[in-house]
Structure formats: structure tokens, C-alpha cells
Image (cartoon, rainbow, N blue to C red; front, top):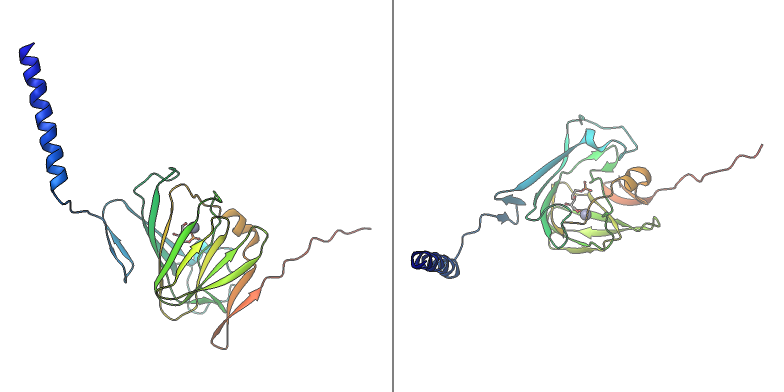
Length: 218
Ligand code: S6P
Ligand code: ZN
């Protein structure tokens, strides 16, 4: 019995020592960002790449000078310290959207609604020149400028797509909830209400005219 008590006491002392050590030492964290270059380093950094062939349906035109289906359009790195779908966590990521066009339409991201409309997101650009297209479920779409230093708050109910209208990669950071989720299907089916096209060296916004459903009566 006495031995047991001594052992327990020893264990407690060890735990207290560990706690003390933790409280007085400055920990070196493994996750770091290169803010300007748009790079994340550390464990558990996830990566994805989107090639032209992954963007089927995004561009209505097929005209492409010097582009192959393996041309990279954008890449994303993100740190997911919480589980995907977990309530209360946050993800932190960076997107590199290359400069380029398919015909006269600029390179852009797929674009998506968040699966949960209560989950907002921040975007901030660090290099390049772009446009953020935002769209309500009703189809109402508008454009916001993205240049180094602009900080954009995206309401959780709005679809978001980024378009690179410059001549260099557009790099932007994002922070979003781990349970935001993705609805790509609506965009794949309906697209956005605006397209961003190049005309005489300038980016212009062109409304998308949807074909009305016409009932044929014989
Ligand atoms: C996630 C956030 C970004 C995009 C990324 C690629 O909520 O909005 O990290 O995933 O910019 O865009 P997309 O539309 O292909 O996911
Ligand atoms: Zn998002």
C-alpha cells in the first residue's frame, strides 16, 4: 500500500514536471507561410492541381492556342489542422492561378457554393491582378477587384470564382471553416451570370444569357 502511494506520488511529480516544462518553453511550430510567394510548409499540407482537362464544361469554347489538356490552370495548398467536416475548425490555404486564356476567356477557378450557407470565407491577394465573381442562388452575379492587399469577405451564401485578368500568376490566400463543404454541382450545371473576356487587351464583363425554357404547343 505504502509502495503504491509512493509510486502514485512519483507519477504525479513527473506529470507536474512535464507541465512545467511545457509552460516555460517556447515551442517552435512546424507550420510556416511564405506570405508573398504563396507557399505553405509543414506537416499535413494538402495539395491539388487543376489542369485544363479537369475544367471540362467551364469554357464554352475550345479555341486554345498553344494549350494542351495537361496545361496547369491553378494549384491549391491548404493546411487542414481539423478534420474536413468538423464544426468549429478552420482551414488556411493559398491558390496560384496562372495567367492565360482559353480563346478570349481568362483562366479561372471552377467556383463553388459552400455546402453550408452559414460558412463565410476570407480571400486576400498577394500578387497578380484578378476578379472575384460572386453569385447569389438567384443567379445575380457581380465582380470585385483582387489586387495585392485587397481583403475580401465572402458571405457563405455566395458562390465564388476567381479570374486572373493579368499577365502574371494571381496568388491569393484564403481562410474558411472546416465544415463549409463544397457544392460544385450547381456551378457545373448553371455557371455564373457573368463571364470575364478579353477585348482589345482589356477585361470586360459579359452577362450570360440563359436560354429560356420554351413550351411547344402543337
Ligand atoms: C475553398 C476556397 C479556395 C478554393 C480554391 C480553388 O473554400 O474557396 O481554397 O477551393 O481557390 O477554387 P475551386 O472553386 O476550384 O475550389
Ligand atoms: Zn470557398
